[in-house]
Image (cartoon, rainbow, N blue to C red; front, side, top):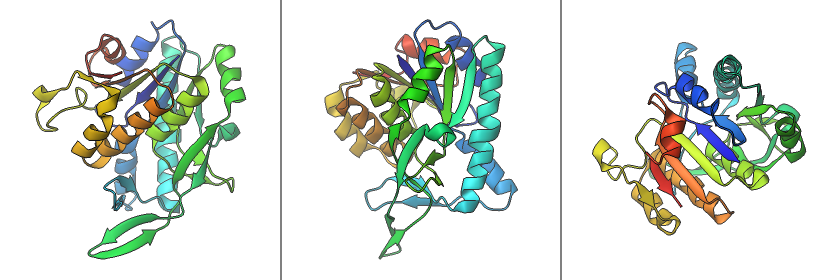
Length: 263
């Protein structure tokens, strides 16, 4: 079982990814983002996103009700359905779902995010949280009947309300439920770079034992991504590939080890 996480950047080659997946014999599930599309929609609607940085240095988007609406338009709407369309054009019978649908991904709302505003420590509350479980019977029902689930946010919380979450964390609960051996994470970079501004600084292989040190080395979204990867190994994943989603054959390249392989 493979979990394919498609980043939400505007340069990601969706058509190349789906064309590659059409030639894969192993079962797979797709999880996708849409952050570039969300940000454009938010700007067009006159309500640009706000980014929070926790006291531990992890960044997240402040998710009020307006942001959730925009997110549903971008993630669950346009991006999800365009991916489904591409899948159908390549002979993949895909089904698009958010974590809300059939309570596919259940989570718990955050009690608050501890942030500094100036020198003041503040607790910020919004509609965000952490996924905790997957509707495994529904997932297997789809997979066993020849459908490919294409999943995205939002997820559903303990009050049956929509909340935002990190797709890296969605991948974590999916990996646990499906016992997936391989996770492919397609981003707008060649892989994990020693220097984020130097494309030649790609690190080809990282032992799982080095993940904590690598997490401390980076900032922003990559810091959160490395935390999520570390948690994947703690629960049993055996191979994570962080690879370039912009090439002509992103999946083929990833499986050939052309990104960063963590094992």
